Image 1 (spheres, rainbow, N blue to C red):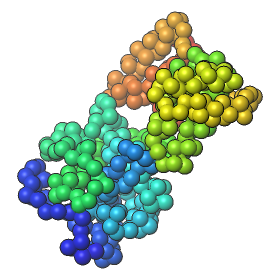
Image 2 (image 1 turned 180 degrees about the vertical axis):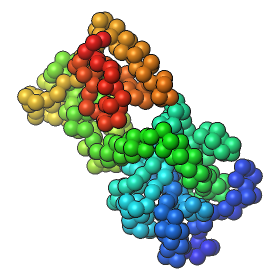
Image 3 (image 1 turned 180 degrees about the horizontal axis):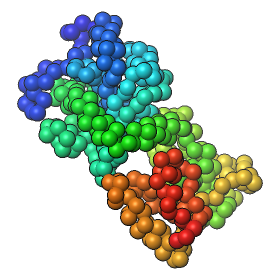
Image 4 (image 1 turned 90 degrees about the vertical axis):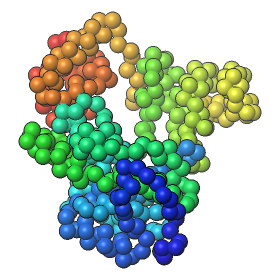
Length: 380
């Protein structure tokens, strides 16, 4: 794309990256140059800027890329390089660096059609190196590299054109330091003997993000375990409808049916449309009678749950709460010499699951399962 058609307007902006530059990937030549730089070093850094306010699917506004020594920006609205970047993402010979990449992975996969391989998330790497919590990129750069980055453009509208110089400078900084961070973190993780742990957790993140909607979305709703079985089934049907409709119309889920309202409707008798309409009216829904008729039809079409329908676990009782507390205390002792946050090894939900069933769930994975071998939940 010719330089005069770029979507960036020049600006005299001051800040921590005022003298730092970037290159645009806006034609076949610049794309090939980026590819050759990445191939020489075997590594690339990547981040995205997107908007997810009025749609189900995130709208991709900018892709930031970096070789070991140069930052590149790609405007996906102006130049189509999705297939080429997708090939790099899927290439197992290339190491990809990202920070807190959960949503970025989803956005990149939808844009490029590629599932990333050999992906290293520096937020996960930081946790495995002994830093507690999910530390943000700006803070990690400040603590590790003594560089202060601006947060001023976090809430920018990345779909609006032209992009400002300030926006692009902020976006470029998001990948500029990933190689330096990774060099530090990977060295520490290798010394700790946790390289396999990092690989496992990064792959688990990819699998989780790209697994698609759950067939049983009620299991993710808070307090669902305290509802009667028939209420859980109706809630499941309503949330399945919401997911499918949100995808079809490309609208946010809660625009179509708020979770709290879904719970309220699920508690209604499917044949009592008046009660449903009252719930909908109280929630401010337009034309509540028509919506009540729609939901009644949905629920009455499948009135009975199948035999294998999974119920959400019931809330833990008083004795189980004591067991969870004791198990967490033991976990804290276990985690301390490892330099890991206890909740990074096992969350509260995992502890409760372990107490209910007397064993660690398979979801903890390989390295956590090995670390937790010395703690038998059935003994607490």
